[in-house]
Amino acid sequence: MPQWADDERAEITLDALMRMSSGLEFEERYGPLADATHMLFEVDDAAAVPLAKPLEHPVDTHFSYSSGTTNVLMWIVARQFDSADAYHRYPYEALFEPLGMRTAVIETDASGTFVGSSFMYASARDWARFGQLYLQDGIWQGIRLLPRGWTAYSAAASHTAPAGEYGAQFWTNAGDGRSRPDPDVPADAFKASGYQGQLVYVVPSREAVIVRLGMTHDRAAWDANAFTAAVLAALPP
Image 1: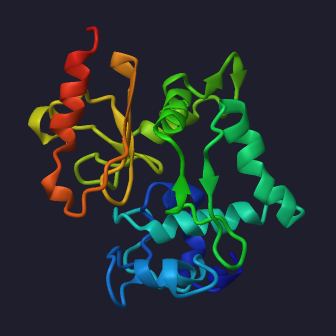
Image 2: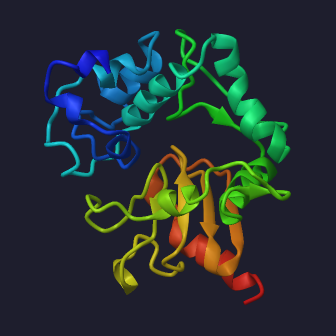
């Protein structure tokens, strides 16, 4: 990372970025003058905002959810391609088309880099296909689309997450009993969680994928734990 080559940020690893333990300063708040809002709506290059941030904690010692971290990862991915066209085709050719996610759209910022933290849209059935891919360990119709072990890596709780609530770009449900983030949901469950309560929950022990495309402005007003537990209770044991 050229922006980090000459200081302690050079110690940041891909794993630390995946697990939100980079140590970078970033204000995950959506309002006037906040880092997240500035990143999404006021600059051409979303990744430039987190890339310019200093370290707030030593690398891989502190968990702090940061949508900016995801956009740093998108910036890195973009530089693995020889052309912008190949990069922009890649998620469709490698993921959406094989899964039959025909409604999926993922937007870029003005610089042409995918905004991985936000701005991806799909129907409920297509989000369920995405979850089903993870339920099936990255295999779809007999073809491996994700590297072997990637699902387990994504769902494994990070050592920096204080309640074991985060893995690698997925929220997890680790912990014992009532200490779990969703205590009435099996401990092996993991989820993608959207800005206003959208949800793709993968529950391996129940062979279930649950999708919710609601819009709740006040996240505390909607009980994801009760909703997910109620859906699981309605399914065959």
